Length: 139
Image (spheres, rainbow, N blue to C red):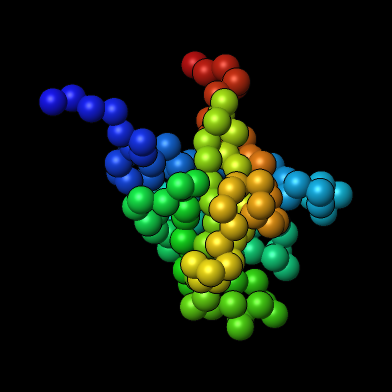
């Protein structure tokens, strides 16, 4: 029996997340652009040389809204106390936009809706730059 499923399998969701995304933290646009690069289960958040994090992500099943858990593996100098911590976020991809919103540290702190999350980011996927794509070939 073919049935509808509420969520795509994690492998499909991981595939949709892959790539480089650029955008802003909502309400902090003056803080500059952020870039997130996701390759496999590696998730790299970069705002500037003083604020970046390298993490490993998991997508727990059965969550609504969907969640992404990022375990911090490396970070910018001055943020070393963050290594080993897990950042939990809601995530969704709609109309080519990846939206992330941080949520509490445990289930009792978890907001019930995406809009209740904090530190919301809105990002769009960027295409990889092709080297010398516009240069004519010389003979």
